[in-house]
Length: 345
Image (cartoon, rainbow, N blue to C red):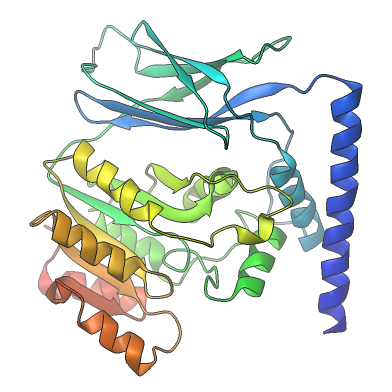
């Protein structure tokens, strides 16, 4: 208990120092503003872009050798970056330019059509801040990823592939600030399960999570470090900063349904495997998806988190489309189901 109080005091002391340092910086010189691009993917005719505009901060690369204090410092630095609302961003793709504005959380998105791949034109998209004016606004780049086919995977992240303790705010908060992409732990066997589920990367995979965009780089690095198939990562838009950092990953999860609807509409020929956990509302969200998009969901894998009480168990078993649900306790069990039922062709 004493150790926990000391750690909390250290965290708040660091937060106060960074807030004061940020104040001094803001009055001493003009903040550098930049685009942080997140997504550039689509089908054969449409592409979806997403990113945010923030006051730039520098961040050292994570390492497995860094201790909890170094990771806390990095987390505070990550969340001390300020989003820039109502900024104007120029998106340039296939020799055409588009202007988009950020929302109150500094996030922007745009979907464009009639943009078939052209071997003579680059599939590279560039982003640049037009307003507010800065001394020098760097240009950000992303390669546009095109996906096609008849099968895909949509997966949650917290407590589905990465140990997060989402149902325990204290544990979740401590993990999120004291660990980095190389020290966070995956659930056992996840890498093998996802390789089999995606046919060794043949089928595209999309990640949908209630984590906020400040954790985008951490999740991206984690997937690559743990050899888990990589794909577009769709996170929660609400901006999290030092004042509300404890809310990261919490709140309403209905945005997941909106993100899945985007994928369903963008890839109308695909049927999807859905993967989540019982700790939040993934089963209910996935059941709603099955109801809204009949025939579009092949199977659902739900990892059981902790002990289910009788009422929660009854709720899960009575969900619409529950005959497509596989309630699993481990990745090994999920792999056995894949192999026994020959689910993945």
